[in-house]
Image (cartoon, rainbow, N blue to C red; front, side, top):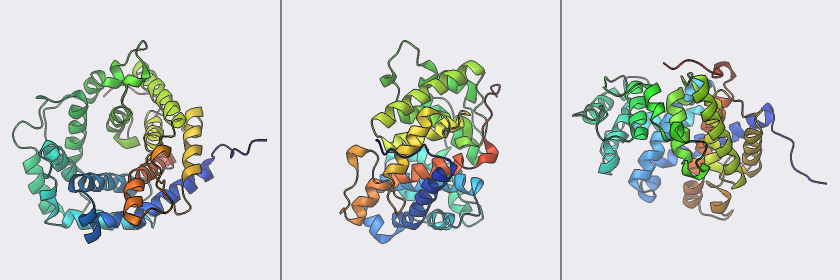
Length: 317
């Protein structure tokens, strides 16, 4: 007889979430420690800190009383107060303006970070950056989302129009699923739905189309044991009004993540193919596990915030 665990219930997902949150809260400070600054490349570290700030925002909205949030909040607060951090945002000129906009949008509440935030935002929005000029559909949507979050005026298209020109919307039934990039699809959904805190604003036909692609991509990523992408797709399902604890692909994805999670809460790699060895040194293990564990923490903290489930459909805003 097989020994496959039972399908994950709410208690199992709560345990998965608690482990991922605990590990992230305990270890995220490495990003701003001397060893982390010495051992991690600048641009990936900046991106990791922006992801941490995004997690802090969602976590504080969904479960502000969780004691494990303290470690994440402390790291974000310290970095956003640092006078040295803003210059790191421009270390890679190709991404500087986008990172600056995200930094301004994701600043923690309170006056301590307000001075650096205002300076960085002023650099980010200078010139024609907040116009559609020369932006891909995805970058246009991402810029619109963070400009809105930062509260800065812009001349970018509205969300329904940006969905209509997205790769997700344009993927016809006659096209292979392999043409879709999972990160592009999931972040398109995240930006439309504010990572699960608002209705995505899609009409019934667009919603059905997006759900179909996300479910099929989830099935594919579970088959391939791609842990990081599966976590993103579980959150995308939720953002589209699906319940990953009930959809077959969502159940399979949650079961897979629960099976690979270590006792300390880490998801030890982005996929089975690049699982960190049990004997890996701490820096190597952190670099392998940080992204996937943070994604699981983000996805599950939103999934478990039952009071804000996204409606099944709504008219486009």
